[in-house]
Length: 248
Figure 1 (cartoon, rainbow, N blue to C red):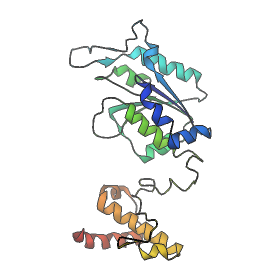
Figure 2 (figure 1 turned 90 degrees about the horizontal axis):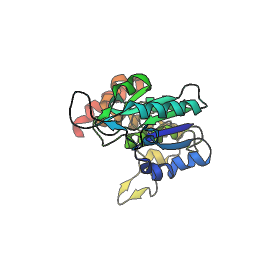
Figure 3 (figure 1 turned 135 degrees about the horizontal axis):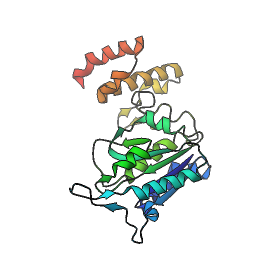
Figure 4 (figure 1 turned 30 degrees about the horizontal axis):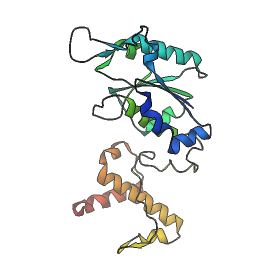
């Protein structure tokens, strides 16, 4: 999968794309990253990419020409028939695991990182396929959001995590938060690992994990249950949790 990132600060990505799972993805040819300073596409000798907003107001607005030319150039060179063009902006759709899974099916993502007051509206209307926000807060630019998107997508690519089951039970992948984890020692300062995890009974362990995943979601992110279809067993557990909630 190919990722092209359009930014005014390409050096911000050097450490992120060169380590951990992202580096592994490159080494195994599962992903490739190109970070481009779209100032290079400016049509004047000063490399100007922004200008004052029509109608007045604070801040500067990114001009359409550099980004239009950059995206059109990357599309012309792309081996994908229809690359997705992702614009990072506070007005975009809230990013979530489902969107990451959707992006992971693509061959080519072009990610645009904004700065200043915003984008010329013609950029949104013409060359962008997806407007994404990583949360209800404002950052200085889109670079950190771009890193979040790339990381969340790459780890879903086949073979990248090594164990194909690794991401399938992550928080949000199943619709619920992930269950608690424990490792050695079984008794640490008097705090003991739940006996069921030491039993060797895989059926009971899986049931415990399912129940604790539901419990954690109920206690920490009950909003996730609004659109989650519970089976009969889970419905009984939920009633149990509701009766216990006063103790939490």
